[in-house]
Length: 624
Image 1 (tube, rainbow, N blue to C red):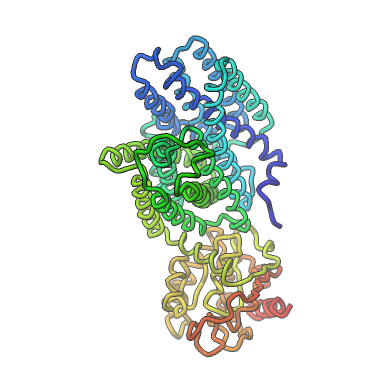
Image 2: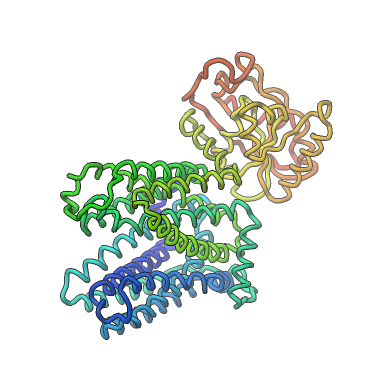
């Protein structure tokens, strides 16, 4: 059954939460933008220190609570029922916005800086609740779409908050009244929406809170490091916030010194970047086909580097005077290319981050998701501070803003290569995604018969060297494949199977020790509740027909009784990866864009499993 992320907006299990978090993000950005402009212009004379110092102090005060309180917030999110906690956070927002109104009334910048710190505190508490709630209310196939909507709304909130906060302060003589009404209204409506968030049970009600933030932060990081895929996903997301902070922070000066544009051109650039992120996030579900598709992450990473480089090539100028607005800036050579690059950076940023968030929620320990998100928030805050230091260091070294973008794009490529070297499954999933979406036209039937959870064995006819890639691409489970050892060691294609952590196996007469090792590994995977796929023929078909199924499947099920799910692959015989002409992958590639079918049959209970029966069932599917 196919799902659309937009259908979630009709669901009570998602819509109230979505509205709550979106309004909270909007309120944050309306206030932050308004405060920055106030300190730069409206309240500059009343400040006890320089306005530039005040603006930087404001940024620090908002980020600081993420360092101080995220570890505690993660524990609270795990220990208590989340919908009640969200309502309390939203009530706190109303109180904080009331304090903001008092500060506005008395023109007290120091008071307002304290309010900003409280807003940072509230956001630090809300983050683990937000991302911890999603996997409790969404199915696995909905995680990508749900995260896409959340990420899109966050960046749209940043854009609208910046525009609205700027407009209110510059367009109206009664700016204090309008800003106060906006802040309180958003907080109150957000609280009303939060009252409809469905009950979300505590995942670890017995958890004993560790109030020592330093030891808890250390504990969070030790836990994150236990699962390499989770840790690298967190590292990837935090790096994106570094990358994004570099670009977002420099956009006002870039618009001025490189494009010669005024504040309206800044808005145009921010709108382009935000539009791209929304498009990229929304594309994720379409390109993921209902699964958490980390194969999109390399696409996103390399796209960020390529278009970060191209935005430098599009216009490397610096030191221009402001002579253009958002209408006339197109007279400046390279403007359309710059705006296109901004949109594409956003698109590839969405493709990069959304699958990583969904992956953390999917594979992270359900009893530690909120604490993982707390650790992620600490990492994000650290990387954003680091991005500011990095930008200052580069610019103080004499480089221009376009050159800063170029350097950041280069560092992004190095970070991406590091992550993919440490976790080659990202590249494996990318190659799989590319195969099933470009080289062949594949139709799948009845794959919903394969359960989302629990141990099982898939058995399939063996037609070509890419059978495993196609099954991996369309099965919504992470599958551990058992491969004939000579295929596992084959040039080029064997490298992919090593990345997929396939289990090599050999007949007893070829390598008895390897055979026993393989059976042991299969048993371990099944005991862990994983899905394993084997090709019982033991070798590629030499004539396109289904060969005899070996007795190894019976030994596997006898040792670990689990259901067996028959699969049949049709249409690959005669392809470049098959042995139709004797040797696979020789001569010119052939039969690309062929129509391929992957068909699943009803599961066979463990007590009924025998090789002959499974061969018959796969043959029936193949002939259907």
